[in-house]
Figure 1 (cartoon, helix red, strand yellow):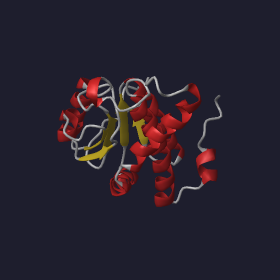
Figure 2: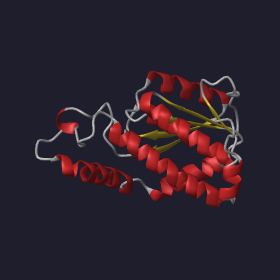
Figure 3: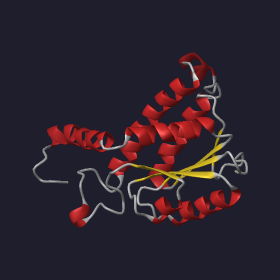
Figure 4: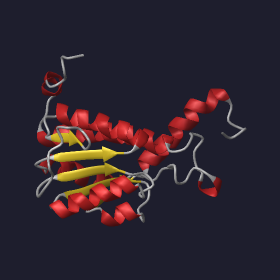
Length: 190
């Protein structure tokens, strides 16, 4: 953390950093990703570490929207094929598991939709569609590349959360989902 940031400024600085990252995301790319998701026969999602927490939250909202979604690794994850989308997040773009799963999705005929901070990464090369979130990740949190007061990949992960919430709004409008229909799909087993 920068010594010139006093505790009273931490929220402001963190929110400003998140806002700056989100403002740089291409709106057309967000809309294209939403269209791809809306048109998918099945959506399989995957992320590693804290990115997994964010994408699982997004999967929950996709389910609430009435979209056919499953989380890779869960027993209920179906096989992916043509007309399906494999949605992965890999901030650094070099996660070995993400790369392996993207290759499997490609071999099955599914479309790879990647969220990443690194447009020149191995995962971006495998992606059919890449949505770039220009934020600090675990791969860029040290030395001259460090751009955030937040630790490690927190600014990327925080941007994912806000981006996913905006995508839920866009998807809801795109498919005509109502808040009432979404609420009706929420579990009663809590």
